Length: 76
Image (cartoon, rainbow, N blue to C red):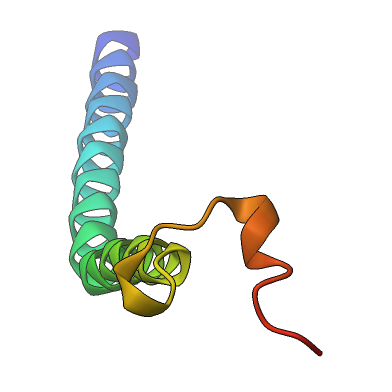
């Protein structure tokens, strides 16, 4: 009787561990699938921002202006 009870407990623990592993794996996979487009958009946005900063450094006539000259480039 005690041996049967120990086997039932062991089976329950193993089944719970297996279920937990499967659930965590599925949650991780679906999370990656859900957030992948957002990650790609963020990466693309960062590339655009870097490009815009590079273009902003180039003044009229294609001259590259250092940061301290850009502030005073346009009169206010």
